[in-house]
Amino acid sequence: MWTAPVKSQAYQVLWKLLLHDKKNKMTLYIGREASKLWKRICAETTTELNLLADNWKYLLAGLVCQYIHGLAARGVHYIHRPGPTLQDLGFIFLPELGQDKAYISETLFSLIFLSFVLWTFHPFILKSKRIYTVLLWCRVLAFLVVSQFLRIITFYSTQLPGPNYHCREGSKLARLPHPQSVLEVLLINFPRGVMYGCGDLIFSSHMIFTLVFVLTYQKYGTRRFIKQFAWMLAVIQSFLIVASRKHYTVDVVVAWYTVNLVVFFVDKKLPELPDRTSGNSPILLPLSMKEKDSRNKEENHKLLNGNSVDPSDRRPRTQVNGKNLEDGNADTAMNGA
Image (tube, one colour):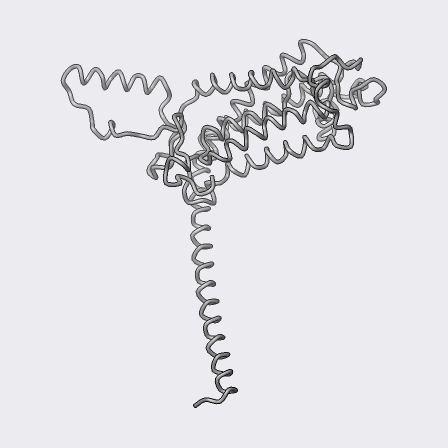
């Protein structure tokens, strides 16, 4: 028979051995998973660099157009003339947030922007993925550039008196003095010049980015709940922009149908993105619509002549431009993307 002190010491030794064993297993597991994650990041980086080498011109052009858009918004501020705030239905029904709460709409926009950017880089982390980051951003920038080009034409056509607090009569920021040099214009006084701009109203730039991001995730994302939540945030963002008096209601309304139409028509002109869920999708860009039509005509011609078509080309494929596999329809095609 063991005495009580001996039993206590035996239990303590056994407990220490169990904790040590668990600690060793946890250390091995963390090390193994970290090694897998690092290999995944390296492999994805190699793949994306190859795509970047082929598509850097499109990305650079898109970024240059972002600067041109900022330059145009800065330029219209020089010709902005403050005046009485126009009658607006949204201003009547939505209570004014006030200057002390104007940050709310910017906070929500920043949340949407950062969330989308992080999601586009999920292929570097997650094992399951359906997009290539470089190709997706080429597509997103194409949507943004066309929408912003239409926006520049619109707000230069007619200058409305800005409803924002710093754009109203009596504000020192409502009018800009004539620039002293070309460099002053080209630098666009970033970021202050972007945050306190006036005159670039129709249509809302914040809504352009928000809707392009939401529409892109609607097509390439897989989480149904996140899609629904994203649309809800877009609607809330619309109300907050009007409530904070950063735009007239017409600026938001025009953005809603213009951006949706731009994405709809531009998306049809762009080549389809390869679907990575099959695990054997090529790195090269997929066929364009013309190439697909010519290939289909060639296959139909072969069938009419009695020639067989390679059955491997007839196997069912999951098109990215079709309906996405979502959590409720597939066995979790994506791990969190």
